[in-house]
Length: 414
Image (tube, rainbow, N blue to C red; front, side, top):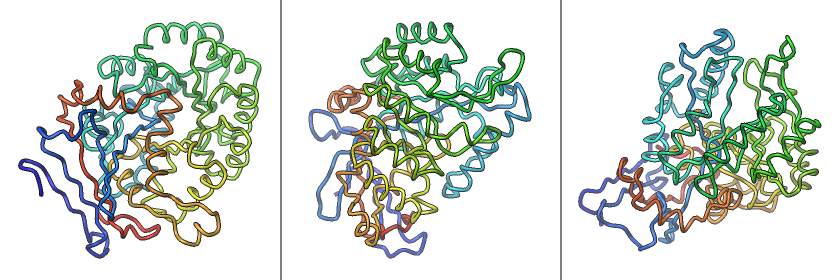
């Protein structure tokens, strides 16, 4: 029975699906909190009536500023954000495409509402891209990120970045950030590595760096010393005007082999070079598949998405695949709902000998990232039950009823 004051949304035949192919989202009454330990924002109910609490950790989250007043080199800054916007428009359901000005700079309040209030996410991890050659204050400003994390330390996770071309000053900055921002055991454990970033250097312009260089290895040693044990390397689609070759996965292979005690999350799973990624990651057990960008294909290219998932499950298994909607490129609400209703086609199950069960989806959506970052899920659920963000956004657990008929690789009916 629907609780008084709760909302019930039934999403059916908008894409021509039969009515039994549906997802029902019910927000529970604010006064009703099943269980004493706290719940995640999603409770998935399967057709057999079983309910599963799903804790969602998005490992690759952004609050960026690409507004015109932040453009240092307007042609490059504009081209960068326009390339992002094209990706978003190409893969999103139409109702989730914003106007350009909002997309360029949406700010903290909208991000919190989208990701936590509407998007089913329990924790989000920052992965900053500075792009100081393009933007006055950086595309994703580390100081601004620190401010958000200090306000919401049990929802947002602080991550920084490093670049070996910054030398000793860069190492000193990492040391300072750890001292300031490790306000929880899982804070300041990760850095984003953007090997294709442009930088003014020695009177000229450097168009990237390599993770297997001596200078990079010196930084990895410093990271090890500081307890920063998660390295998130962008190795995937190029973004205009950066160079595709700088995103090749080869240097991650060398670094992962050389630093076996560190974890290397290859964000965007090396796309479009998925084979390269899989062949490397199957032997380097400290390499993880970061699904940012890849997740968005679940809607518009379901067969392609199914093939990616089958390959990852075959080569890596279910424990090294991490979820991200890559906000604000894509809204987590539709990505998560489509993923929960997604099934591998029978021919791929048979060929690869794998399946995408609800238990595996739970691992991908949050459990795997929690292990990588050292997040105690049960403790976090207790902490978040009445935290400040829950009060601000009136967060409540919601039931997603997963209909039988998210038919084998077809998009979810909305």
